[in-house]
Image (tube, rainbow, N blue to C red; front, side):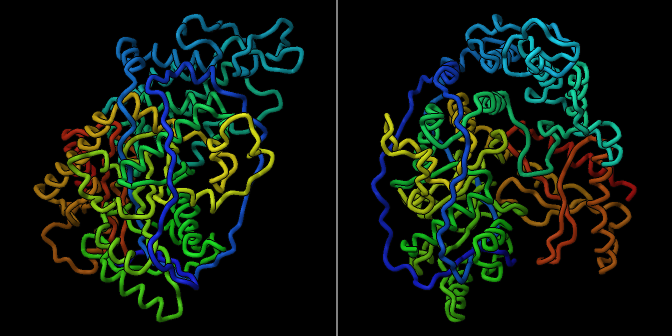
Length: 609
């Protein structure tokens, strides 16, 4: 299989080894409690924009168009908060978190002012009590909407708990109540009115949104490379949104800056780097592009998945300079093919500099042989990046970590905890072994943000090493999961996802009418369902055309019934017509019974095709 790997080239090839700067490491108190975050947070400043362009235009690219996943580590669980979660109900736990959001103390959620009085008009959700003199449309005399202590927050919490959105949707429930776009438009009044809406209308709207949305926490949602989240993940996401600050300076995000430093330190350690740096970015494509590819380019000349192709276009390299590298029959990059591609690029006047390997590809879940690729890159002076956005969660598992053997030798790694691990969207980390290179590459020293004469240690103002100015507090979501669950629990979840996929694979091979495409490496299981009408027939070109229509019909039927959601696709470069791609993730924990249901349901839905 050919795939778009990336290897960008330069006019001057890198000579010799790289020596990263010495790193200072930061840690945060192990007993940090959630209630302190509200107390220590500062109001966000007015956001601005920072951009620094590095006019280096590489000529050639070679690498792989696929992805990797997570890492491991971050101390033990926070026992004080974990104990509280265990000894209280789920409703009380979430109510505690909401109390913090409403401006009351987390320790006494019952004291939060939750008066139910409401007049016409949408609630002003800022925790402020309504004053006398509200007009008949629900506004105060000053023009603000009347708010009696967080009615909308109470409502959304009630919906989340009632519908079991994070506590576990029951399998018999629908994954989706599907409506065509025009049908859905008739159910929603999407226009924004002059006077807003009444509380009753607002509550009805929230109910409708949930009713017609996909239940990604349903045990039979397998449609994408992500699924549901648990209560801890939602708590982290809600708290960061409620505090509404920006991850660029210690001044406005003191706790969150410490958290990001600690998480990056832990990831550097998990990858086996002696030193390093990193940052959280808005998704794996951005990590691959503006971090890995730009850093590799700067590293070569300091003076100066499909995501790789997009990155080449966006960075000015050009998609024509993304060179595909051959893979074996399991979808893994061939080291010798990489070596030949590098040589050919140079013979044609290019100067390769960047190789994009993958740990857990999007479709087949393939893991590239990192040790062998690292040998080639060391000999040729190339930056080796690993796209681990999907399958990199194996570093959390002692049983499956061998799949990324050699990862300590690469230059950088991208990982999306919001995929297999189940962190709340979005949560994407970029880590490199080259300390200081992010700052060297992206720093613009905006004088209104990154003053060097501040009243604290400005080394914590790490926003200047990002190409972004405004940046969400994504590191906290991963840190809270590490801290509250502990690494043993996350390892158990990863192992459960792999165990379920292996059971599914064996069942596919054993059942009549199912045909496995290839043995899985990650949790991706790809197969065809051959309905009774096509069994025991000559597999002519016409037969394959008919089979190509089976997966789309199965998808339509399962979605219309709402029983489950599973992905499908062809791979034209391999001559593979539409097949089913099943993936298992950590949340909710997949079981062997869930896997059996998937095959039973496909057989039922496709019996008359």
